[in-house]
Image (tube, rainbow, N blue to C red):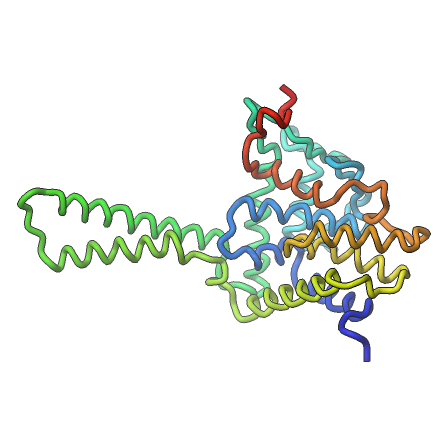
Length: 307
């Protein structure tokens, strides 16, 4: 019987998770109340998943180079769409061999040069999860509609309540007052607190989400102890291939450090992500995310923007 923390056992479960959903799909299942910034952070793990399989190469801290096109028979629809968008010029629609995520600024605000990766890829991922039986609706799209409906219910109800209350001498029937206040309260609750993608998951989707979380807990157990895996090729391959899922669950920095430490135990082993020459992958992940959904302008002291 193999140990739950053996290379073989960990690799088998990782392969099973990747067989059930793409890295994009796992990210969406974990989104909850997250918005555009949370989704933007899922693109880099998917690209690194390709790198771990030798389909793309990380040339530097900003550039991804295509090595081969795995094609639609190998990739899920949302993966194939993302692959095509990354390696196609968005202006003249011509194929290209590299994709640059160098930050660009305008008036000290970073420009979302890769925003076009957001909506189409997210919707393709939503549809793939729905067709796989993991959700009964397109997760983020329907959640956003529910949130909008809450605001539409809340603000007219609140405005009506305040207007009637402020009208001097105006009489308001109890029924009108109660219904208006109730509509405001329900709308506020839906708009501010309730919407989460978990609402729209099926039992299959919740099971897959929970399996991914449970697996992430096992990865954390590995990080909390001295490296228990032998310095052989299967262990190094596992560390590389688990990095995207670790990034999905917020432990990418720690996992990347463990990957490099493990590679250093025997540098004669083949690696595509763990070599010292490979740039910091977690930093690359944030760089990619900020070109899709910038968070804030650089400070004057940071020197950002090259101005």
